[in-house]
Image (cartoon, rainbow, N blue to C red):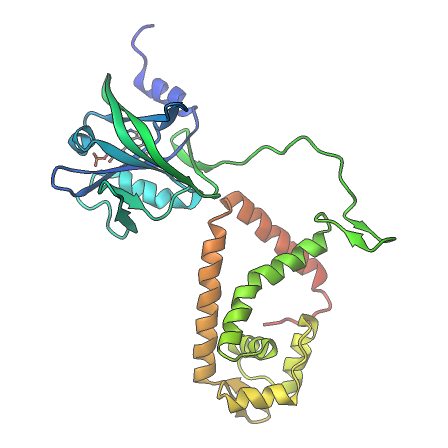
Length: 316
Ligand SMILES: Cc1cc2nc3c(=O)[nH]c(=O)nc-3n(C[C@H](O)[C@H](O)[C@H](O)COP(=O)(O)O)c2cc1C
């Protein structure tokens, strides 16, 4: 073959979709070192060996050649910013990154889809790169969608659908049995499971569910009369009565406002804490989904809310 055109050669290589890893070790002064590498691959199951390659021009080359080992972190889909951070030469790539040293002192990142802790087994010359072969001494994996690198860009992996299997009907009206394919069952189960931690947080501060619903409505809508609140919460299954309103007043979470009631400063503060709690939960949950899955789920739910919401008063 004649000399490859570097641009075309790079493009052709880019057609091989890979995962993305951050490989870490320490330098001669014991300082943490890390690089983004998509050249990672498996080599052997027995003995357990993996490889990756590093450009000879990399500043961190001496550290990998001399430290005796490295930790390979396979990145999850939500970690593309971290990948960029470790792909830039910088004195402090670890700034703002959660990590701790492993037994050998090499940095262990807190988040990853999979981790391979390796002892350096071989180092080979590979043109303008050095190929490191590591013997895996420990590994971990988490059930997270992984980050993919293809054609010079980040991507998400989407698994192909399995060949269709004969479907059980979602619901049997004769026996009253229903399976996991009954969509309304899935929706309500997802709702109960995802709202459970927030309901527990409410209970821990002595707030009942109807009180929580009233507060969230008042936080969004300003001042409302009791009958407006009852009307707007009708479809949620909560019917706050005089006792609930009296309790909200007693706890100082709402204030009278003429014939209406209004959320108080302490009510808003309490509500914001609960909201922050839900937001933190959401952030953890979203890590389990790819951008495509989230966009699809969001479009589906908005459409469903639209279709079923025509005779329901605007909640907020
Ligand atoms: C997705 C991605 C994959 C990369 N894979 C490799 C790789 O396998 N080997 C390599 O030498 N550089 C790779 N790089 C580039 C290095 O991460 C980058 O040159 C890094 O800054 C080298 O670190 P250092 O010079 O600070 O040691 C990759 C960069 C990106 C964004």
